Amino acid sequence: MGSVVNFARVIGDSLTNLVSRMGTERDKAAHTFYGMPLLSDEQIINAYRGAWLPRKIVDIPALDSCRNWRNWQAGDRQIEKIEAEEKRLNLRGKVLEARIKARLLGGAGILIGTGEQEMMLPLDVERIGRGGVQYLTVFTRKHLAAGEIDRDPGSEFYGRPSYYRVSARDGRTIDVHPSRLAIFQGNSTGDEDLAFHQGWGDSVLVSVLDAIKNADSTAANIASLVFEAKVDIIRLPNFMASLGDETYKRKILERYTLANTAKGINGTLLLDKEEEYESKSASFATLPDILDRFLTIVSGAADIPATRLLGQSPAGLNSTGEADLRNYYDRISAMQEIEMTPALYRLDEALICSALGSRDPSIYYSWAPLWQMTDKERAEIFKTKADAARAIAGSGGMSPELIPIEALSDGLVNALVEDGSLPGLEKAIEEYGRLSEQEEDEDEAVAAVVPEG
Image 1: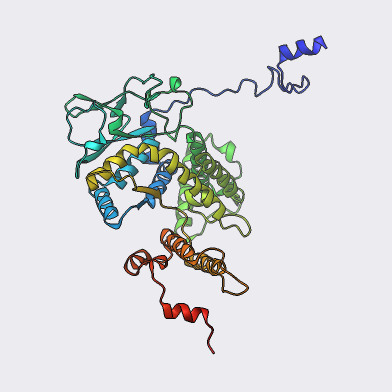
Image 2: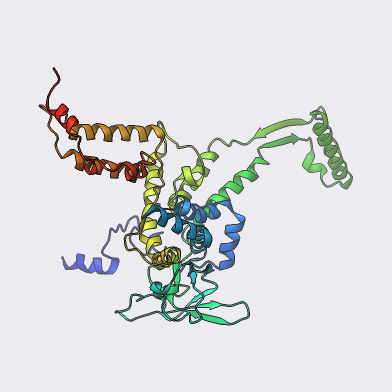
């Protein structure tokens, strides 16, 4: 038993086979390791500008996260003012720009410009009046240097930079308190102490660039093979023996230059009777499958379905790609809630105060869903809700109502307003009132109780 323990200590406590050298130092995979991924800003920008896959991998999730934007929950006039303030500040465009730059370079921030001179003081949202947010400026991590990391456990900014330093045009630097910035990070580095840029994440291209290179190289090699798809072979008598004669070499070049010219003009190849001609074509039957495999790897590495990344039809019998898109949209929705909502918290608070002059605590928003139902699906859902409401309301006699009709009416109105099934319903309810607010007519009540005849 002791020999087995010693063997495990020496060789390693894992699956080992001395005959095949698996698990030993002679194993071919024994010296495989992962090094520090280094990718300069120049390489990142060159890949983004010069290749379509890196650009789409960076842009698509950022665009999808801002595509349908948000639904504000407030009064009609309040929503109009908030949306007008968003348009004035181009908030949607600024967030999209920051998201793209954060994914590309590892981080970006939006400066909330209120006109205050002392930028190192925390932003006091309650002091922002109507029109108080004057501008929004997007900075990449290259122009927004992270300061000393806050190590105070009692600080809300623990583990994050205690300030950011903005580079001005004239060479000056301005220190900005983190509460005045909406910070968007790239991919997580896993360990902040090993981060290449302190206070920032990695570019999303760092982890997928090898897969992109393999796909691009495969596509380029296939493209070069197209020029070798057809090769003409001509056999000449005593060809090698005659190459020592310079006159022969000159004449043979002139001869086949003339032959190729004639072939290019009218498709006729002139040959001597003793010469043999043969044409061979390369087979491309399996190359599309190989390229598709590499592109599938890129799609998996980028966590974007091939139907969205490549714009191709779903593969497989009866496959619609709907499940892949739903999973992808769920990921984008989670990204909006977990990453974007906290990053935009102070900016949204400042936006509401700038639009309305004060903060109404009842105002909130939700991200608009990316998955859009068809008209047929909406009609089916509406019919299902209506049938369910009728069943709950009952029809009298053996089918009594399960809940009071007034409560059912109020709940159904709220559901139809929230999902947008009946546009204009909310305004009509305000004009005519809810069922619970209406007084029952005595004649109608008697008619409902006493049957006719």
